[in-house]
Image (tube, rainbow over all chains, first blue to last red; front, side, top):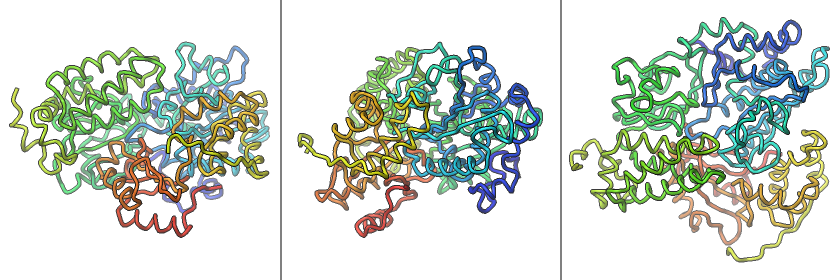
Length: 452
Length: 176
């Protein structure tokens, strides 16, 4: 069996409860940290671990912690980003639902490292039953003395609460999340200042993903050096992958970074291969925002190397022939999927979720949705593909937050790798009227009809 | 339907007030506004799943902020309803991964079964069916949200059963 850090205890009956979690070694990292380690020593361990942010950006977590302003004397906060909303991603929910105390333990140990005395878990409003699970688990942790004043008789005190959103993808962006936590609309802030200097209520704040924080107990218990031995190269540790789409066994899997994409998709231990053994057509390895890969670039890179489940290998070839690890939202498409339809679907998502602050994103996402819709429904013109390319190019890099890029990249990648499919929709409008057009007649079998 | 002036009976019960106070206590004393999103969820759940302008003004009063501060939040976040919705609101995720596994078919099936259009509400006010953006259940598609819970791996037969259970009062909407 592959190495597990986060899910190694997931099958213990009752692990959701405080008692069982504690009996199985839970909260040991809090004891070790508070009784034997200085806050800075913990940050050093996290730095040594090489752990990279698991929300999507992949920024080194220890480095992010080291930016927190300790000189101003203002109160500091740790905010856990549990606003999991990236299409294709459902791993944080799995952790919180099945082993909620792991996140709470991580929050306490991490808050101690940052010198935060008031911390929050911001969870998306749709996960309301998970919010209740976390709320009850926090009450258990208070009752057992892991939260509140003078934890374990030390002079360290921490209050931890869970806060819920109300249906806004943008609140997964850390400054929008902070705005939302302050009871406002989720409009991202201009950086700088960064949250590490001025975050929640103007105080120094670190925002970390659920999975990132849940790795901290293991790092404190076993050392950053041991963590860095797991994985491959600069992709250290394990990663939760949310697998969905046309595979036999969708679900959440913990993998050791460095296995091949082939193994992940086709082995019995993970996705179990393709549904009905149909051919694979495309892969989005890291959530809807990252570039889609066509079949010939899934198992091998453009250089002919095995494509691996690491930050480096998934992005090998840049946007021309690679993609990104992102959030680990792994969406697999077989030959019945329509890439134009899928791209329109995502464009609709981003148009709906744009906060409206920056005009390139507010207007551009709407335009992309409309143009893609007309192509998909057989009303496109030959100029539309270039028009789409032009719109996405004008959004990318021209907005306050990365939502603009996230909306532009999938469109660019779809045109880059699947241009013929767009052309087919324009040349054969009658054949795409039915939304299941490629279910009835996969594109692979009819692509010779496209004329240049 | 859009132009009706709906009225709403506002009733901040002692239980609701005490839950609101608990939520406010999670933030520093001078940051009551931070409790706005969680408080709005509780208030909406206790008021037939929607928030009238009067109810928003009441929330503003409790949190010691202005009504516009509540209104601008209610209009930003999709989970707050500004008009009455069905008691049982079927929210089908239609984003990519669910779409690949037949989400549109499920939404259309539910609409046909209930005799309404997407976004519509049955005349008795019991059911609404809406299409929504990614709910984070991509591996368990097709699915819908119903109250505080998800119904996953949906089939037409299961939708039939859920509708029957709603009519029989067997569905728990909120985990209080």
